[in-house]
Image 1 (cartoon, rainbow, N blue to C red):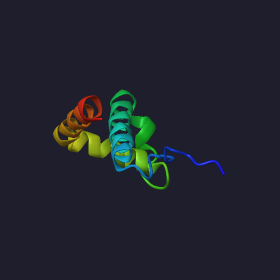
Image 2 (spheres, helix red, strand yellow):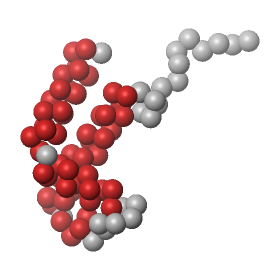
Image 3 (cartoon, helix red, strand yellow):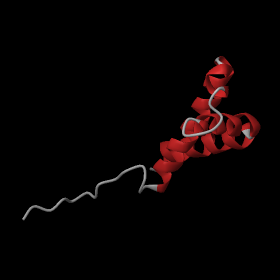
Image 4 (spheres, helix red, strand yellow):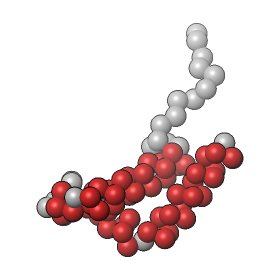
Length: 80
């Protein structure tokens, strides 16, 4: 019987990876909205409305998002 020495990891089950994905999504949506606002503004509801909401979070809470990005970068570079 073969055993796996390293457990399988996914962004869903690893909290730090999940936070990284969410921060990247927020930053990417805010950047896309700054370049082409009509691209995200036409989909404010439904499944694609998640991207509009992420862009709003990135715009309105940008100091907090920036601090979270710096902390996440520090932990990825120096703690892991």
